[in-house]
Image 1 (cartoon, rainbow, N blue to C red):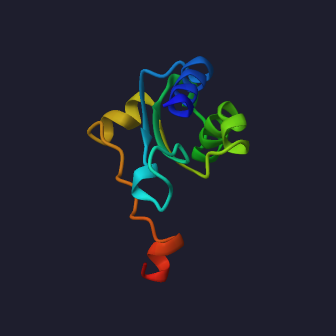
Image 2: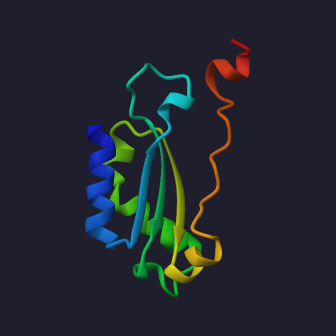
Length: 107
């Protein structure tokens, strides 16, 4: 849970979110048990106001750049302003099933 905690701390410090979810989805992929390589983040922040989705995602990626360079293989990013989050009913989409590695090979 070290990587998950660092991601949470960095996003909190950089974006002051009003809602933050950091979900370790590594167990849904073909990686060793206990891995911290695949994550989903849901970030609701006033820092995103007036910014296009690409800029919002760049803000998230910028905050966790070190983790992305040192072991995080995949990061699903869902960003919202408070208003946009309310319109979703306070729910982000589920991540798709893994189709890589041995899953793709049928084993």
